[in-house]
View 1: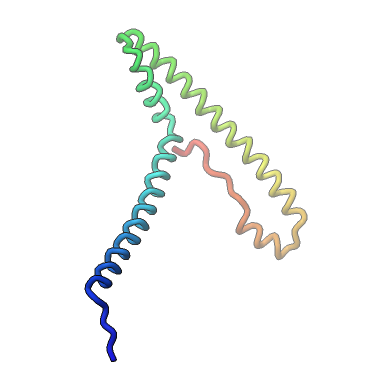
View 2 (view 1 turned 135 degrees about the vertical axis):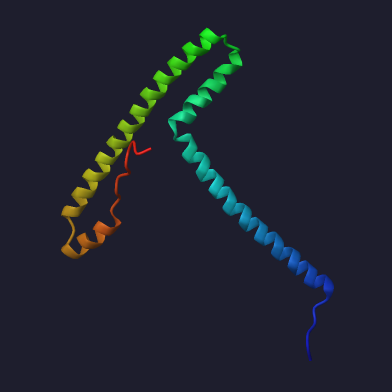
Length: 126
């Protein structure tokens, strides 16, 4: 005895499957867009553009705009240096901790630890 599904049941299953697939695709797309935006926010050029756009709300004249831009350039340069310095300081602490941990390991553990230990990013490689 063959079971046959009604058209309404088949349509409901197909629509449900379409909804689930759309949700999955939307979730993945959202993750990709979020990562892209986060990476963009780490770029000093973006910082300057955002600051200048915000300062445009003051309706500056050309002389003010030039002064704002020089002040913004200086601030972005300082912030970039501070950010790089902070990242270096964090990695000094992490590397010091990993060196201390490595001293406590057996030779077999050291081999595995070498594969999983955190590695510092290249700073200023942009």
